[in-house]
Length: 336
Image (cartoon, rainbow, N blue to C red; front, side, top):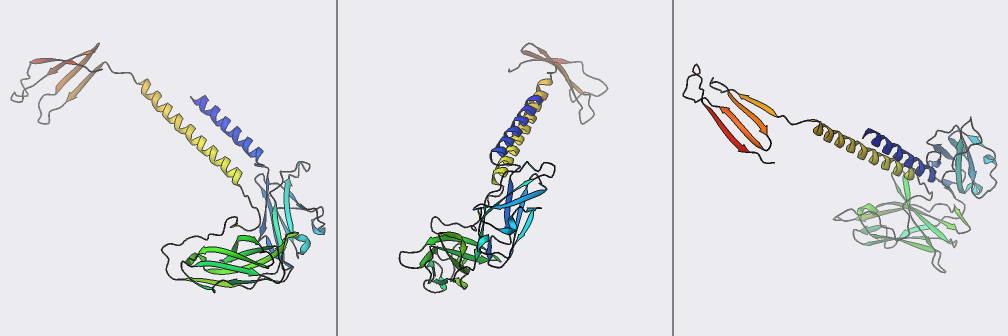
């Protein structure tokens, strides 16, 4: 049984390794931006590349192949400070790593990271249809408009010094405006909102940010509902940070498999212990009378399927010094 468990554990570990290999697994690098992938023109951003295998060196490159002087033949350790950013820095980035002992063996490239540069066009304006004060249950619609005919508009909500993206909407035909419908108002919709505009030919180059709009939903609500952007919206920032989803799923599968194997091993060990115990043929049970009487002896003898019981009985009225010699024999039919 032990060999079977070891074999199954090795098989599970091998399958996990295969899954990791197919998904980029252990040797895959991961790229992130701090403090945010949305950077104002002239500011700095730190790009961080890391991997499970703890590579010594990393290399960063831009997908579109645009010439960025500071990225040419740059080798760095885990983090790279980029800036002051310009329109040329906008786009998607990847990184991969290697060990100093084997510089020719590069890791699997990371997923793309979208760096958005803002402040390149005139800012749009943001307003709430019906005003910034909304009663609970009333529909909430925010309108982002601009004198420039932007192809896309992006709505941002701030909360505790960070924000998330609700959706991007194409402008209406002939009208440089996009309406963001958030659904029936609840206290969860209260907050500060801003919006940006961009063009299809340069999706990572955004306008300057609009003035903030403070939205307040007043009145009691039976429950706090989450934000409900219209279908096709995204609740994340524009970077596609896939994280460690593939590796995490593989690790969870391996832990579940290991738990099942341990459970089977304990079950098999318990059954084996039961099988090792042989039935007792003769068993004598001695009981003592609480009042000092002579002990009663009960002897069981198993013969085929019949049980003969010989019991020595001492009447309660007799004295302990004069033991009784009466013997009663019982024959019981054992049930198999």
